[in-house]
Amino acid sequence: MISLDMSKRSIILITGGTGNLGTELTRFLLKGDNRIYCTYIFENELNRFGDIEKKNINFINCDLTCMDSTDECINKIITEDNKIDSLINLVGGFQQKKFIESNLEDAKEMMNMNYFSVFNICNLSVKALLKSENASIINIGAEAGEIGFENMTAYSASKAALINLSKTLSKELKKLEIRVTCIIPGTIDTQDNRNLMPNDDHSKWVHPLDIAKTISYLISENSKASNSNFIRMEDINNE
Image (cartoon, rainbow, N blue to C red):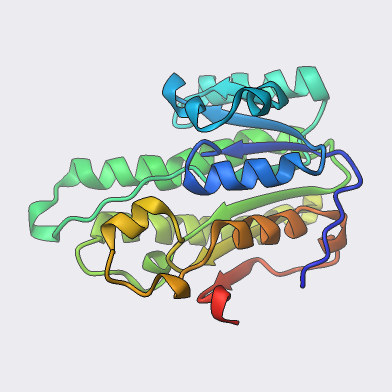
């Protein structure tokens, strides 16, 4: 059982916080009275949250592939809270397509969504993370990025880039006392995935709440001594 310490109020920036995993994580972290910032692109993304939840989340419209938009987002947080304690990158996209039916635009789309967006926000967030006494970055990889999946060439390649970015940052930013961890979940138990794979054994999938609890621990002061930069969460519900 993971011991959670949310007694200290943290400034947390979540990218992709309006998605399936993001909403679960955001709601969980709100229980700890953390100050949450959440990026979004389209207004209808906010409909996943109730009115009371919206009042407790600081939403920022931001294009994470644009340097100016992302820098404006970070500067807004610095102006309001002086720092960022944790950057949690859930932003990303998925594509399933045969290689012979793919083209360069497919590859660019996946790299923009899964790699360049994370590279950009990590890069521009360092100045705010340096103001924290418990700075951390969490990225979400994928098994496809480790071994490559058939009919997912562009997606697999973009996640491979993200995983290696995380490994490199964990070494480089450690000198600045910023922890970087990449979580590699198995299939996440969301309604979208159930619709895509109705015949799979859903009991073996990773529940979003388990990922949320793991992230909460990784960004807490309890994990400051940890040097783990790579965590797999396969079939966690069966352990």
